[in-house]
Length: 374
Image (cartoon, rainbow, N blue to C red; front, side, top):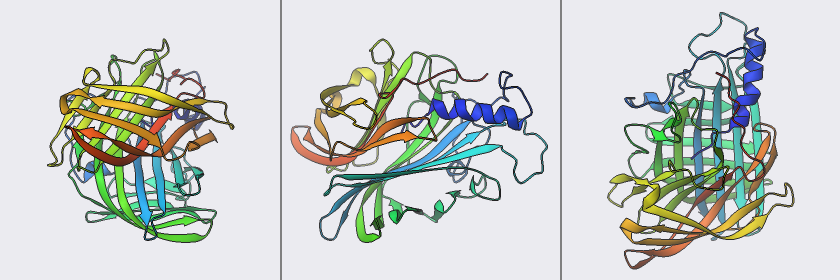
Protein backbone atom coordinates (compact mmCIF):
# COMPACT_ATOMS: atom_id res chain seq x y z
CA UNK A 1 0.00 0.00 0.00
CA UNK A 2 1.55 3.29 -1.12
CA UNK A 3 -0.77 5.86 0.39
CA UNK A 4 1.97 8.51 0.58
CA UNK A 5 -0.14 11.58 -0.06
CA UNK A 6 2.12 14.56 -0.58
CA UNK A 7 -0.82 17.02 -0.50
CA UNK A 8 -1.43 15.97 3.10
CA UNK A 9 2.10 17.00 3.99
CA UNK A 10 1.80 20.33 2.24
CA UNK A 11 -1.49 21.10 3.95
CA UNK A 12 -0.34 20.07 7.40
CA UNK A 13 2.98 21.87 7.08
CA UNK A 14 1.09 25.15 7.04
CA UNK A 15 -0.98 24.10 10.07
CA UNK A 16 2.20 23.06 11.84
CA UNK A 17 3.85 26.40 11.22
CA UNK A 18 0.92 28.21 12.79
CA UNK A 19 0.75 25.76 15.69
CA UNK A 20 4.44 26.26 16.38
CA UNK A 21 4.20 30.04 16.11
CA UNK A 22 6.40 30.14 13.01
CA UNK A 23 6.09 31.67 9.60
CA UNK A 24 5.11 29.00 7.07
CA UNK A 25 8.36 29.56 5.16
CA UNK A 26 10.55 28.61 8.14
CA UNK A 27 11.86 25.03 8.52
CA UNK A 28 9.71 22.54 10.40
CA UNK A 29 10.99 20.16 13.06
CA UNK A 30 12.98 17.11 11.95
CA UNK A 31 11.52 13.62 11.77
CA UNK A 32 13.08 10.19 11.91
CA UNK A 33 13.90 8.79 8.46
CA UNK A 34 13.31 5.28 7.17
CA UNK A 35 16.84 3.93 6.69
CA UNK A 36 18.55 0.55 6.84
CA UNK A 37 19.21 -0.93 10.25
CA UNK A 38 15.77 -0.51 11.76
CA UNK A 39 14.82 -3.44 14.01
CA UNK A 40 11.15 -4.35 14.02
CA UNK A 41 9.62 -5.17 17.40
CA UNK A 42 6.10 -6.39 18.04
CA UNK A 43 3.64 -5.45 19.27
CA UNK A 44 5.41 -2.04 19.35
CA UNK A 45 5.40 -1.60 15.58
CA UNK A 46 1.66 -2.16 15.39
CA UNK A 47 1.30 1.06 17.40
CA UNK A 48 1.87 4.69 16.42
CA UNK A 49 5.39 5.96 15.56
CA UNK A 50 5.17 9.64 16.47
CA UNK A 51 8.77 10.46 15.46
CA UNK A 52 7.97 9.66 11.83
CA UNK A 53 6.13 12.24 9.77
CA UNK A 54 3.41 10.00 8.31
CA UNK A 55 2.04 6.52 8.77
CA UNK A 56 -1.07 4.53 8.08
CA UNK A 57 -3.01 1.39 8.93
CA UNK A 58 -4.63 0.14 5.73
CA UNK A 59 -7.17 -2.64 5.14
CA UNK A 60 -8.83 -3.87 1.99
CA UNK A 61 -10.99 -6.94 1.55
CA UNK A 62 -13.01 -9.04 -0.85
CA UNK A 63 -16.12 -10.36 0.90
CA UNK A 64 -19.26 -12.33 0.11
CA UNK A 65 -22.63 -12.69 1.81
CA UNK A 66 -24.39 -16.02 2.40
CA UNK A 67 -26.49 -15.21 -0.67
CA UNK A 68 -23.40 -14.88 -2.89
CA UNK A 69 -23.54 -11.09 -2.97
CA UNK A 70 -20.00 -9.73 -3.36
CA UNK A 71 -18.48 -6.65 -1.75
CA UNK A 72 -15.15 -4.90 -1.54
CA UNK A 73 -14.03 -2.50 1.16
CA UNK A 74 -11.18 -0.20 2.11
CA UNK A 75 -10.47 1.40 5.47
CA UNK A 76 -7.33 3.46 6.04
CA UNK A 77 -6.31 5.45 9.10
CA UNK A 78 -3.60 8.10 8.55
CA UNK A 79 -1.51 9.97 11.09
CA UNK A 80 0.57 13.01 10.04
CA UNK A 81 3.03 14.36 12.60
CA UNK A 82 3.68 18.09 12.94
CA UNK A 83 6.34 18.40 15.65
CA UNK A 84 8.89 15.64 15.12
CA UNK A 85 11.61 15.19 17.74
CA UNK A 86 11.02 18.52 19.48
CA UNK A 87 7.41 18.88 20.63
CA UNK A 88 6.53 22.29 21.97
CA UNK A 89 5.54 22.67 25.61
CA UNK A 90 1.84 23.34 25.24
CA UNK A 91 -0.50 21.73 27.79
CA UNK A 92 -3.66 22.79 25.94
CA UNK A 93 -6.02 19.98 24.99
CA UNK A 94 -6.44 21.80 21.65
CA UNK A 95 -2.74 21.50 20.86
CA UNK A 96 -2.18 20.52 17.20
CA UNK A 97 0.69 18.00 17.16
CA UNK A 98 -0.84 15.45 14.79
CA UNK A 99 -3.53 15.48 12.13
CA UNK A 100 -5.59 12.33 11.59
CA UNK A 101 -7.32 11.32 8.37
CA UNK A 102 -9.38 8.28 7.48
CA UNK A 103 -10.81 6.98 4.20
CA UNK A 104 -13.52 4.31 4.00
CA UNK A 105 -15.11 2.74 0.95
CA UNK A 106 -17.64 0.02 0.21
CA UNK A 107 -17.94 -1.47 -3.28
CA UNK A 108 -21.36 -3.03 -3.93
CA UNK A 109 -20.31 -5.24 -6.83
CA UNK A 110 -23.74 -6.60 -7.74
CA UNK A 111 -25.19 -3.12 -8.16
CA UNK A 112 -21.97 -1.46 -9.32
CA UNK A 113 -22.30 1.18 -6.62
CA UNK A 114 -19.33 2.78 -4.91
CA UNK A 115 -19.64 4.48 -1.53
CA UNK A 116 -16.77 6.49 -0.05
CA UNK A 117 -16.30 8.70 2.99
CA UNK A 118 -13.49 10.57 4.74
CA UNK A 119 -12.72 11.94 8.18
CA UNK A 120 -10.32 14.73 9.17
CA UNK A 121 -9.62 15.41 12.84
CA UNK A 122 -6.99 16.43 15.37
CA UNK A 123 -6.64 15.10 18.88
CA UNK A 124 -8.51 17.95 20.56
CA UNK A 125 -10.72 16.36 23.17
CA UNK A 126 -9.91 12.85 21.90
CA UNK A 127 -11.61 13.40 18.54
CA UNK A 128 -8.96 11.20 16.92
CA UNK A 129 -5.73 9.50 17.85
CA UNK A 130 -3.30 6.63 17.54
CA UNK A 131 -1.86 5.17 20.73
CA UNK A 132 1.89 4.59 21.10
CA UNK A 133 1.53 1.92 23.80
CA UNK A 134 -1.37 -0.22 22.56
CA UNK A 135 -3.18 -1.18 19.38
CA UNK A 136 -5.83 1.53 19.27
CA UNK A 137 -6.47 3.95 16.40
CA UNK A 138 -9.61 6.02 16.01
CA UNK A 139 -11.12 8.92 14.13
CA UNK A 140 -14.32 9.98 15.83
CA UNK A 141 -16.36 6.75 15.98
CA UNK A 142 -14.35 4.94 13.30
CA UNK A 143 -11.86 2.68 15.04
CA UNK A 144 -9.28 -0.08 14.83
CA UNK A 145 -8.29 -2.25 17.78
CA UNK A 146 -6.95 -5.70 18.59
CA UNK A 147 -7.74 -8.46 21.08
CA UNK A 148 -4.93 -10.99 20.94
CA UNK A 149 -4.52 -11.96 17.28
CA UNK A 150 -7.99 -10.69 16.34
CA UNK A 151 -8.11 -7.23 14.79
CA UNK A 152 -11.39 -5.36 14.75
CA UNK A 153 -12.35 -2.51 12.42
CA UNK A 154 -15.52 -0.44 12.47
CA UNK A 155 -16.54 2.53 10.34
CA UNK A 156 -20.08 3.68 9.57
CA UNK A 157 -21.23 6.84 7.80
CA UNK A 158 -24.82 7.58 6.79
CA UNK A 159 -25.74 3.96 7.61
CA UNK A 160 -23.12 2.64 5.19
CA UNK A 161 -19.87 0.98 6.19
CA UNK A 162 -18.22 -2.00 7.82
CA UNK A 163 -17.88 -3.83 11.12
CA UNK A 164 -15.41 -6.69 10.78
CA UNK A 165 -13.13 -9.06 12.67
CA UNK A 166 -9.88 -10.16 11.04
CA UNK A 167 -7.49 -12.98 11.95
CA UNK A 168 -4.12 -13.40 10.18
CA UNK A 169 -3.89 -16.64 8.23
CA UNK A 170 -0.22 -16.08 7.36
CA UNK A 171 2.69 -14.48 9.19
CA UNK A 172 3.75 -10.88 8.60
CA UNK A 173 5.54 -10.08 5.37
CA UNK A 174 8.28 -7.41 5.37
CA UNK A 175 8.63 -5.64 2.04
CA UNK A 176 11.85 -4.40 0.47
CA UNK A 177 15.35 -5.16 1.75
CA UNK A 178 17.08 -4.63 5.10
CA UNK A 179 13.82 -3.54 6.72
CA UNK A 180 12.97 -0.76 4.28
CA UNK A 181 11.03 -0.39 1.05
CA UNK A 182 13.03 1.92 -1.22
CA UNK A 183 11.06 4.46 -3.27
CA UNK A 184 13.89 6.66 -4.57
CA UNK A 185 17.63 7.28 -4.75
CA UNK A 186 17.90 9.98 -2.06
CA UNK A 187 18.39 9.23 1.61
CA UNK A 188 15.02 8.78 3.27
CA UNK A 189 13.15 7.99 0.01
CA UNK A 190 11.82 4.86 1.69
CA UNK A 191 9.35 3.48 4.19
CA UNK A 192 9.19 0.76 6.79
CA UNK A 193 6.54 -1.48 5.28
CA UNK A 194 4.95 -4.77 6.35
CA UNK A 195 1.70 -6.60 5.66
CA UNK A 196 -0.62 -9.39 6.57
CA UNK A 197 -1.36 -10.53 3.03
CA UNK A 198 -4.24 -12.85 3.89
CA UNK A 199 -6.58 -12.44 6.86
CA UNK A 200 -9.73 -14.44 7.55
CA UNK A 201 -12.52 -11.87 7.71
CA UNK A 202 -16.06 -12.05 9.08
CA UNK A 203 -18.64 -9.48 10.08
CA UNK A 204 -21.10 -7.07 8.56
CA UNK A 205 -21.35 -4.76 5.57
CA UNK A 206 -23.97 -1.99 5.73
CA UNK A 207 -25.45 -0.35 2.64
CA UNK A 208 -27.79 2.53 3.50
CA UNK A 209 -29.00 0.71 6.58
CA UNK A 210 -29.30 -2.74 5.02
CA UNK A 211 -27.07 -5.25 6.81
CA UNK A 212 -25.25 -8.14 5.15
CA UNK A 213 -23.40 -10.85 7.03
CA UNK A 214 -20.19 -11.44 5.13
CA UNK A 215 -16.99 -13.44 5.15
CA UNK A 216 -13.91 -13.57 2.99
CA UNK A 217 -10.31 -12.38 3.09
CA UNK A 218 -8.53 -9.10 3.73
CA UNK A 219 -5.10 -7.56 3.23
CA UNK A 220 -3.48 -5.32 5.85
CA UNK A 221 -0.64 -2.87 5.12
CA UNK A 222 1.42 -0.83 7.59
CA UNK A 223 3.83 1.87 6.52
CA UNK A 224 5.64 4.61 8.38
CA UNK A 225 8.08 7.07 6.87
CA UNK A 226 8.97 10.75 6.65
CA UNK A 227 10.02 11.73 3.12
CA UNK A 228 9.59 8.67 0.93
CA UNK A 229 9.18 10.01 -2.62
CA UNK A 230 11.54 11.74 -5.01
CA UNK A 231 10.63 14.81 -7.13
CA UNK A 232 10.67 12.97 -10.46
CA UNK A 233 7.47 11.02 -9.69
CA UNK A 234 3.99 11.85 -10.93
CA UNK A 235 2.15 8.95 -9.25
CA UNK A 236 1.98 5.19 -8.82
CA UNK A 237 0.00 2.02 -9.46
CA UNK A 238 -0.21 -0.50 -6.59
CA UNK A 239 -1.56 -4.07 -6.66
CA UNK A 240 -2.47 -6.54 -3.92
CA UNK A 241 -3.23 -9.97 -5.36
CA UNK A 242 -4.60 -13.02 -3.52
CA UNK A 243 -4.68 -16.17 -5.66
CA UNK A 244 -6.67 -19.34 -5.02
CA UNK A 245 -3.43 -21.38 -4.91
CA UNK A 246 -2.79 -19.55 -1.60
CA UNK A 247 -0.05 -17.29 -2.95
CA UNK A 248 -0.08 -13.49 -2.72
CA UNK A 249 1.68 -10.81 -4.70
CA UNK A 250 2.27 -7.13 -3.95
CA UNK A 251 3.53 -4.94 -6.80
CA UNK A 252 3.94 -1.21 -7.29
CA UNK A 253 5.18 0.78 -10.24
CA UNK A 254 6.24 4.37 -9.63
CA UNK A 255 5.46 6.58 -12.62
CA UNK A 256 7.91 9.34 -13.57
CA UNK A 257 7.05 12.69 -15.11
CA UNK A 258 8.80 11.71 -18.34
CA UNK A 259 6.47 8.72 -18.77
CA UNK A 260 8.97 6.07 -17.69
CA UNK A 261 8.70 3.66 -14.77
CA UNK A 262 11.04 4.44 -11.88
CA UNK A 263 13.65 1.68 -11.36
CA UNK A 264 12.82 1.56 -7.64
CA UNK A 265 9.42 0.05 -8.45
CA UNK A 266 9.25 -3.39 -6.86
CA UNK A 267 7.12 -6.04 -5.20
CA UNK A 268 6.92 -9.10 -2.98
CA UNK A 269 5.94 -12.68 -3.78
CA UNK A 270 4.45 -14.76 -0.94
CA UNK A 271 4.28 -18.52 -1.46
CA UNK A 272 1.63 -20.87 -0.10
CA UNK A 273 4.08 -22.08 2.58
CA UNK A 274 4.52 -18.45 3.81
CA UNK A 275 8.01 -17.95 2.45
CA UNK A 276 8.40 -14.66 0.62
CA UNK A 277 10.96 -12.75 -1.38
CA UNK A 278 11.55 -9.34 -2.91
CA UNK A 279 10.80 -8.70 -6.60
CA UNK A 280 12.78 -6.11 -8.54
CA UNK A 281 11.40 -4.26 -11.54
CA UNK A 282 13.13 -6.54 -14.05
CA UNK A 283 11.38 -9.56 -12.55
CA UNK A 284 7.83 -8.51 -13.43
CA UNK A 285 5.91 -6.56 -16.03
CA UNK A 286 2.62 -4.65 -15.89
CA UNK A 287 0.80 -3.73 -19.11
CA UNK A 288 -2.33 -1.59 -19.34
CA UNK A 289 -4.99 -3.10 -21.61
CA UNK A 290 -7.93 -0.72 -21.21
CA UNK A 291 -8.90 2.61 -19.68
CA UNK A 292 -11.77 4.37 -17.93
CA UNK A 293 -12.48 8.10 -17.73
CA UNK A 294 -14.16 9.57 -14.66
CA UNK A 295 -17.16 11.82 -15.18
CA UNK A 296 -16.43 13.48 -11.82
CA UNK A 297 -12.80 14.48 -12.34
CA UNK A 298 -12.05 13.90 -16.02
CA UNK A 299 -9.11 11.68 -15.04
CA UNK A 300 -8.41 8.69 -17.27
CA UNK A 301 -7.29 5.62 -15.34
CA UNK A 302 -6.00 2.28 -16.62
CA UNK A 303 -8.77 -0.29 -16.23
CA UNK A 304 -7.42 -3.76 -17.14
CA UNK A 305 -3.87 -5.01 -16.56
CA UNK A 306 -1.77 -7.91 -17.74
CA UNK A 307 0.88 -8.95 -15.21
CA UNK A 308 3.75 -11.38 -15.77
CA UNK A 309 6.18 -12.65 -13.15
CA UNK A 310 8.85 -14.48 -15.07
CA UNK A 311 10.57 -16.51 -12.36
CA UNK A 312 7.30 -18.08 -11.17
CA UNK A 313 5.79 -18.53 -14.64
CA UNK A 314 2.81 -16.40 -13.57
CA UNK A 315 0.55 -14.69 -16.10
CA UNK A 316 -2.47 -12.76 -14.79
CA UNK A 317 -5.27 -10.57 -16.10
CA UNK A 318 -6.54 -8.07 -13.51
CA UNK A 319 -10.03 -6.66 -14.11
CA UNK A 320 -11.92 -4.11 -11.97
CA UNK A 321 -15.16 -5.51 -10.55
CA UNK A 322 -16.68 -2.31 -11.93
CA UNK A 323 -15.14 0.85 -13.30
CA UNK A 324 -16.34 3.65 -11.03
CA UNK A 325 -14.39 3.09 -7.81
CA UNK A 326 -12.87 6.57 -7.61
CA UNK A 327 -12.61 8.60 -4.41
CA UNK A 328 -12.97 12.07 -5.83
CA UNK A 329 -12.42 15.63 -4.56
CA UNK A 330 -11.27 14.53 -1.10
CA UNK A 331 -10.66 17.39 1.30
CA UNK A 332 -8.04 15.43 3.23
CA UNK A 333 -5.66 15.13 0.27
CA UNK A 334 -6.89 17.95 -1.99
CA UNK A 335 -7.32 15.45 -4.77
CA UNK A 336 -8.72 12.16 -6.03
CA UNK A 337 -7.55 8.60 -6.58
CA UNK A 338 -8.91 5.23 -7.73
CA UNK A 339 -8.97 2.38 -5.23
CA UNK A 340 -11.04 -0.63 -6.18
CA UNK A 341 -11.92 -4.28 -5.87
CA UNK A 342 -10.62 -6.44 -8.72
CA UNK A 343 -10.95 -10.01 -9.97
CA UNK A 344 -8.07 -12.05 -11.30
CA UNK A 345 -7.63 -14.98 -13.66
CA UNK A 346 -4.62 -16.51 -15.33
CA UNK A 347 -2.04 -19.20 -14.82
CA UNK A 348 0.79 -20.07 -12.44
CA UNK A 349 3.30 -22.74 -13.34
CA UNK A 350 1.09 -23.80 -16.20
CA UNK A 351 -1.96 -24.33 -13.99
CA UNK A 352 -5.06 -22.10 -14.06
CA UNK A 353 -5.56 -19.71 -11.14
CA UNK A 354 -8.17 -17.20 -10.09
CA UNK A 355 -8.13 -14.60 -7.38
CA UNK A 356 -9.27 -11.33 -5.88
CA UNK A 357 -7.50 -8.21 -4.79
CA UNK A 358 -7.26 -4.44 -4.80
CA UNK A 359 -5.63 -1.84 -7.02
CA UNK A 360 -4.70 1.74 -6.14
CA UNK A 361 -4.04 4.39 -8.81
CA UNK A 362 -2.64 7.77 -7.75
CA UNK A 363 -1.60 10.80 -9.78
CA UNK A 364 -3.98 10.48 -12.73
CA UNK A 365 -6.20 13.43 -11.86
CA UNK A 366 -3.17 15.66 -11.26
CA UNK A 367 0.49 15.08 -10.64
CA UNK A 368 1.87 14.81 -7.14
CA UNK A 369 3.42 17.87 -5.57
CA UNK A 370 6.79 17.56 -3.91
CA UNK A 371 7.53 20.91 -2.28
CA UNK A 372 8.09 19.32 1.10
CA UNK A 373 9.37 21.34 4.03
CA UNK A 374 12.92 20.73 5.24
